[in-house]
Length: 494
View 1 (cartoon, helix red, strand yellow):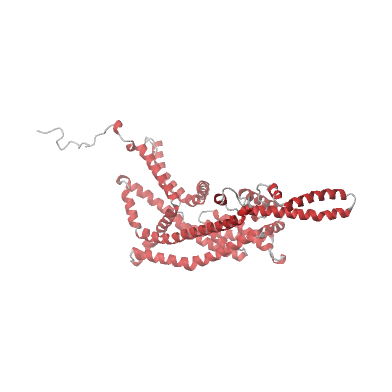
View 2: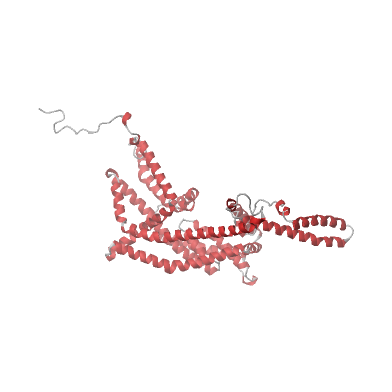
């Protein structure tokens, strides 16, 4: 006699029956799981941002391991090296390049940057800018002045470079005259002198000349007292009220020496502490990045295999196909742009050096870094023109470029570099890895910059390439099937 459950044709029953909605935990609902997953990802990103001192070296090392993976695989296949040997050789070559090339170039760049900052603080560029404006035609001069006004409104600190007054609160004259008897006397003498000048101007010409000297002396005393007060306010240690809450150095002369000593020691201690923290962070970055890179590069296949095993078996083929397409787009763009940036930075530095642009090495290096983002390198053209103009106005008039030469030669160097990028470097090195047209690249770069600044601009093109792959391979087939009546839900997973 057989039971209803026995027999070969009966399907096996689920040992865990559905408990019903009243006994289902909230995290077993699919919508709640999706929300919790998104929140977990955002929390991890936030935690990584807060722990940037730890995560930044990790991310840099992981990115380098990803970029050098094809080179390591090639070395293993061609020379039959072990993976540890290949990674050690790459790390040794990288450290040697840093010591022999990057460090000397960095010293030169730092020296040029320091010289630029010193000249800007001394007012050299402000005077040269005014002289350069006089060499331009009237229409061009008006456009340059409009651009300067816009730049000063956008970046107020740039007004100091152009020699313009930085807007700020007007100082009050009461504290100046209240505590300085000589200033009060000088002000009184000024008032009296003005009255005497007015009376004498109609009668005795010598009276006006006699009162001019007290007026000038009083004005000098007023300016000197105000400058002294402003400098004292700027240099005052913000910790001084905490050290002496009852009274400050400005209110009681007995504490002036002690407060000044505390100000000096406190400012010096803060600078030394900030310098020490900067050196420690730089040392950790220099040490941790190669350290992490070695272990990430050696264990990279194991990490990839572990991630592959996490993908559900029923979706594995489709996920692998999409990930491989995204990997080709991202790796092709990133590796290609890094090589192109290095080449274009060298081209710009040498070209601007030939046409006489000062600080060409530092400028070429910075513009080369900007080349990592398509079309962002154009910001180097006005800077190169401005530096060349400053250098030219300091030369004798017979040795200067014409005004059109100052505009033409730096722009021509940039045009040569950009043409080399568009017609030679990008087709040969990068190709059509991202499969994006120029308009899509520009829109993606602008959108990334508005959302996350420079980091958004760097990640915008790879992210746009991945989004395009998802739309083309996943979303559009579903929409076509829905429009043709072959599917009831156009959304992926519906």
